[in-house]
Image (tube, rainbow, N blue to C red; front, side, top):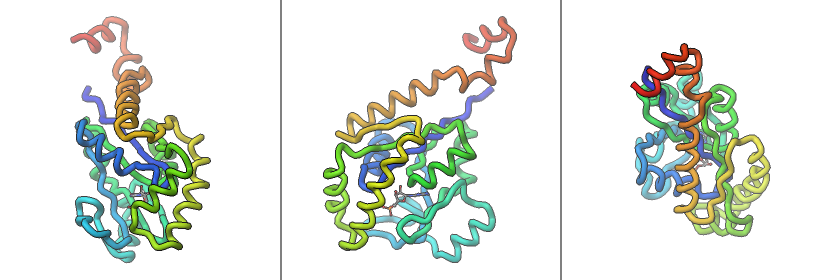
Length: 209
Ligand code: 5GP
């Protein structure tokens, strides 16, 4: 029986460095990054279908009606959603999928997809989080304050996740996530459908043949 891919949900507050970590993970590994749909305007340098599928609010609502999203959430006044069918197809094909999404979205995915691996990215400190949001430079002073305040509250959600990774350096954070993936692949409850219900001889066959 072909094993399904793992669903890695990488989430955490704005400015914690999820995006940079995901890019670095993709450079070193064979993960498939899900491209989200959003109603927000593209930032300079962002490419449609690569960074996001930039769509209108009407299109977004139609897609909600059609049950096209695995999850969606309103983040800072814009909608963001994970297109469902591609994610499921890629997982079915045995490839590991990364979702880089906000906390509300991650908790929705957790309800529907308990076998996902839920990783919370923490900034090294609150001061560093603030500096990162400022350095991003794409925010007005008001939206910067909104992002910082909500990031402050969001840190509390770490308790709902299975793993917390502090983003001191991207290199270290990536190493930790790669180790989590290795450990998750070895979990008996992941492979129990294949081996645990089998007879003893058959377990040997499945593991070694
Ligand atoms: P940004 O506007 O900075 O690209 O993203 C804002 C927030 O939305 C980030 O926390 C990002 O992880 C989150 N986000 C991006 N795509 C999705 C998605 O498909 N679903 C949800 N729930 N959040 C998303």
